[in-house]
Length: 229
Length: 111
Image (cartoon, each protein chain N blue to C red):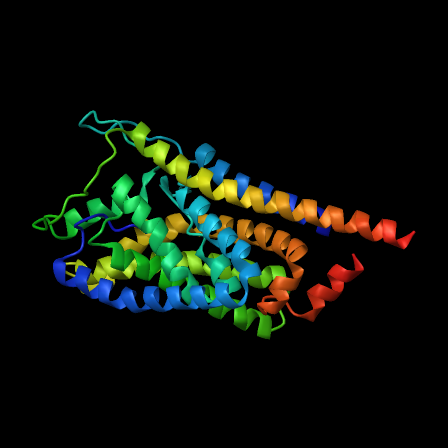
């Protein structure tokens, strides 16, 4: 999902930076506020950030014969809400843009928007809907994480298609081409991201039962089950 | 079942990574004699697609630092993963030890 340095026209680069900035600023505010009122959740914030660090560093081979990486932003979005992930995603993207020539400073805004805004918001929304529909907890977590992963890559495809419409077919044809590169490669990786997120979430439910209940991630049910165990 | 749930999921994730390696076969070198590269990054494929969609487009900025070799690049990616995995391991160690200590304390109080 990294758009490479210089690969967005100036207007698009500026536009996406302006679009992402308020999310990062508001996210920093929510993180600060939460750590102040609930210092015991610091450790969980660290786990959410660490999970994004690991997953976005893993470039995995996919069935299409090309490699791509998961994003890991769904977990944090379910724990802390979608806005908290914008600054965390920015740290990861900045690290890769500055040191690895992976992504770039001019495309940072666009990359933040796909990985650290659209993905987390999708994860939080799907998680909430799935819980409201009374789906099992693990199924909700899996769906939220994997859909967020996939939507991140569809966003990147749309961003590139907007900047580089197909000479004949316009935006739609171009979007189909970019999505063909990104989204199909991403399908199995989205499943992997969903599975790994459930594994970490299971551990969180086991060891941080009280915090997860405070954060309204799990209901009374999980706590009661934990007390029995 | 619940006990093995995590194990099964991790194994499934590993299988999903391993299967493409085994399924996707390298096709023969093209007429130009160039080796076909498989499992290249999707990000780079998209970069090439930009060049075909608008051949006149020239990237207007170059990356500040480009890892001098693939080895240096993978060093930094490994470092990034190690930082994250290290922290998760630290949290897991702390948490499971705390849970164990709490359990043994409850037992002694119970007696």
